[in-house]
Length: 132
Image (cartoon, rainbow, N blue to C red; front, top):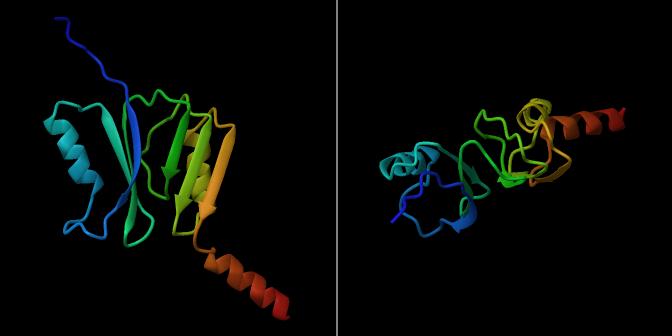
């Protein structure tokens, strides 16, 4: 029987962690991938709340045209084929984040941003400017 020499994958899932007794970490998932012989893979873990985590696991190099549920923290990888990106996080995205996006996603055409918390410093500046 012929053996498969490569496995190209992208798995993205949302997990309810309210009943888990341990924290889900990128390092733990990465070690599991290494243990099963999948060294050419990356993991992104994005905590959206105390109860919800978005987890993406994908083979390297990234071979898909979209990525979902990227948060403020993501690996320093060039996503050469991705043209669609959905970013979502509780923490406000700052200018440097978008600079990293531009560098990491050179073919990006569509960007959807869901930010749960308002960027406080901008809001405070706008509020103080409005008062004067």
